[in-house]
Amino acid sequence: MQNSMLTTPGEFKLGMFSSNCSGGLSVTKIPERWDSSWENNLKMAQMSDRAGFDFLLPIARWIGYGGETNFHGSVLETITWATGLLANTERINVFATIHTAFNHPVVVAKQLATMDHIGQGRAGLNLVAGWNRPEYEALGGDLPEDHETRYRYAQEWYDVIQRLFQEDDPFEFDGEFWQLARTYTDPKPVAEKMPIINAAGSAQGREFAVRNADFLFTTVITKEQTQQEIVDLKQGAKAHGRDLDVMTLSSVFCRPTRKEAEEYFRYVVDNADEGAIDNIIRIMFANAESFPKEALESLRERFAAGHGGWLLVGTPDDVADGLEELAGIGLAGTVFGFHDYIAELPYFQQEVMPRLERKGMRLPRG
Image 1 (tube, one colour):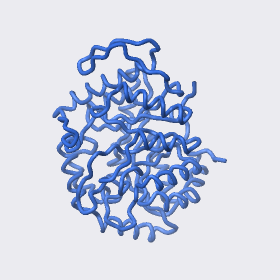
Image 2 (spheres, helix red, strand yellow):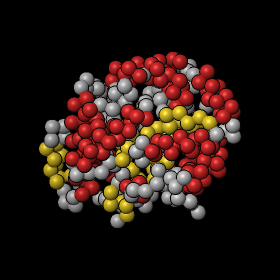
Image 3 (tube, one colour):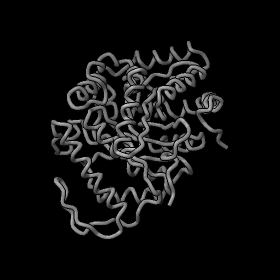
Image 4 (spheres, helix red, strand yellow):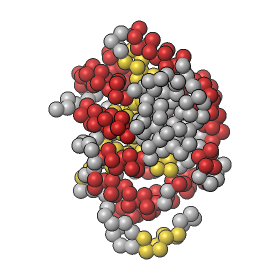
């Protein structure tokens, strides 16, 4: 049995986020915004693999956010996306993002195990308990009003997955939401422990994460606030006899000069798809707690640039220093959004990665 490198403590971890979605993370109307074709995703994944990135993380989306661009209106489904990328990469971990409400746990367990065999122990699971009401409506479901019910359902769903991965004999499961008879899965995953990601802002979501996840994703509003959150989350996990690492989302605009980086940032933001941003904020305000409600409207520029992520705008030194600051507050890593992953990645690899190595945040890659 293998252990995923993501469950081993060490370097400041780097991932790519949302490349399977049209527009990526930038809610902008610029003509060169990200095209989420399979060809582009495959090229991005292989470039990220060679560059030494640790993982790829997709967003599971079923309908777009409207606006002029219908941001995230075209999305590659994450199980099949991850499986294809695992078959065409060598070392990088690839996650599937699964909404517990829309997927049967026994089916997902079989899919994940198959993915892990194809990737030889590099598959991961990003669990989503649900928050996007229009997607529930599009799929004929009903989003529970309270977070408690959503996470009680997600816990039982994940309990089924865990038993399927741990137990060899068929078993009965008689829960509040699932009643299963003589169920099992074979083969099991290759990895001894498949890494689990969860993003949560509510009290119920964070309690779920400290009980189950290896990595919790949080949004950095201020570094001081996030530093205390990390301490609290790690203590919460210790109370359950577990370790938990915390990561965040960053949006990168890196150029040889600050002037160039800031000009391109302004170009992206000044061409924001305001209608799509309005819809994102409205849906999140009503149904999610990923961002503090009082902060949502003030983060419009960050949504335009990178779906609310922490901004890293400047020279390679500026970006490397910004990442060092994130590590300094206790974050274990970050996922990135680039306005164009393929166009931006070579410069990041050439200029920022060596600086992270010199700072001791990353080990050199052959």
